[in-house]
Image 1 (cartoon, rainbow, N blue to C red):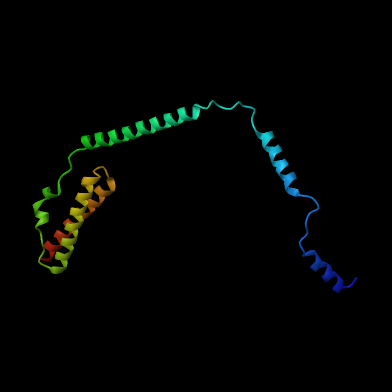
Image 2 (image 1 turned 90 degrees about the vertical axis):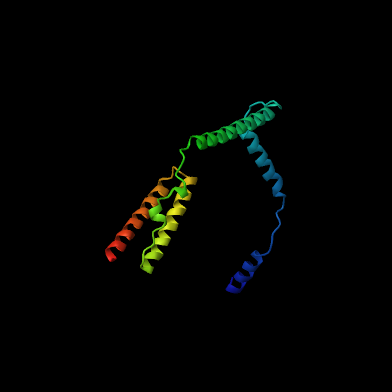
Length: 151
């Protein structure tokens, strides 16, 4: 046998070949046998149990929702009154340095402080907002010191 004949035989192998018998019948039977072997021998549940379980889940979900709404309402009633934005210190609200570069920084810091106070009103227990507010007030104090040092 030479190389030409090998190549011809290889080309013949690429042709589709139909099986002599139907394979799907034996595959389906094997799957059915495997499912029957794995199925537990537990009798089926009564027909009313899924409805009962569904009602129980709906009732539990409703109760949890009511508890959540009640807890939020209770938290809002018990939250301490946070200081209003209008109650800001008058010295910081009306302060404007003579130097225009420092005046721009003073305006930005004052706007940031006011926004942080509004955010704290919405989330009074946020430690991150409290830290940002204290940093902003510290920067305002440093800016005042720079203004005083500059003359």
